[in-house]
Amino acid sequence: MDRDMDAIRQIVMAVKDSDSPVTKVAGMPADIFLKNAVYLIKKGHVEGGYEESTRTAEREPILAHIDGFKGFGFEFADAAEDDILWEKVKRLI
Image 1 (cartoon, helix red, strand yellow):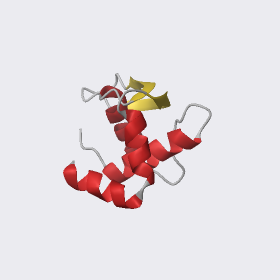
Image 2 (cartoon, rainbow, N blue to C red):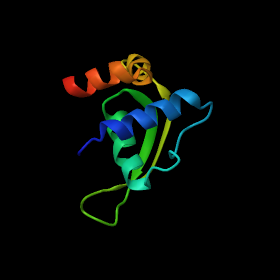
Image 3 (tube, rainbow, N blue to C red):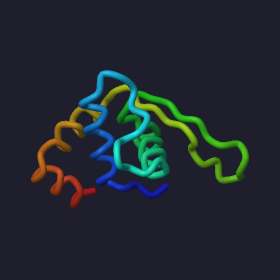
Image 4 (cartoon, one colour):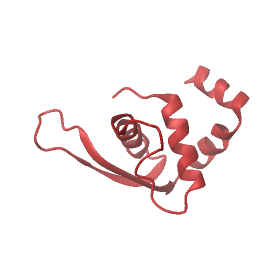
């Protein structure tokens, strides 16, 4: 699964600013949100869940929700707020 670090940043900031589960980000295509939300969930950075399509062999995500952070996700969210630090994080990753 390809990750999009700028999309991940937008998702992380949306989660940080929300009091309810995040299921989309304004202006972000649904497929980009889904792939990157699932990535964050699978890596254990966020609490949440997802559902995959059973209609295709590729098992594409069709729904995802992020409820909050866990583990490294808290530090990741702090780093995402600072533009200079974020650029350093992107270069390291």
